[in-house]
Image (cartoon, helix red, strand yellow):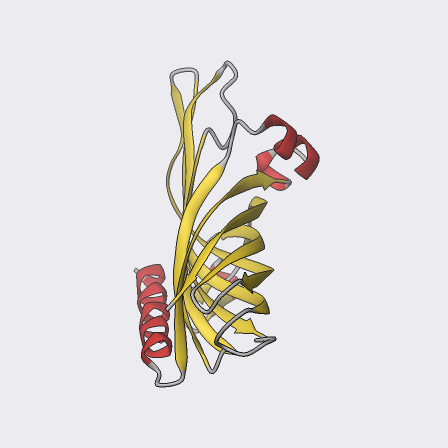
Length: 199
């Protein structure tokens, strides 16, 4: 329930940011690869194999082009691979995030926007090994990332993005304002590229 409350607050921040008089909203659609940590392979290996692609999208808003929030959703089929004895498996992330950007060239016309993000949300893992279900559930998680948005026109551009994800496990000795902040053992990095629409 705590995770739902935090995600609800983040969603309200997103809506307020997008509705600001000086805000610009955006939506992106991306594809990429997971690597490092639980993904079990380097970036070079992930790019070379190309059989565990992740894809998803994000919607957000930037106030004055600098401060904003977004909701990032991504899905990976066969996150852990598909070689025996690994069976059906997947990974879903739903990550509301705060965004800090630097609009180079302004909020209209061509330009660049380097940015950094930090989010709190959910990771859902599913994994079968043989006929045994190893994972089937949701974890509270956080993400940290950075990237750059490049606009060709006021409304269309591309985006390159890196994010690090890690689950958060319960530890009563580490309780802060009602949320248990203890880094979990499941982590990985994600690199993506995508198309970007500004409105």
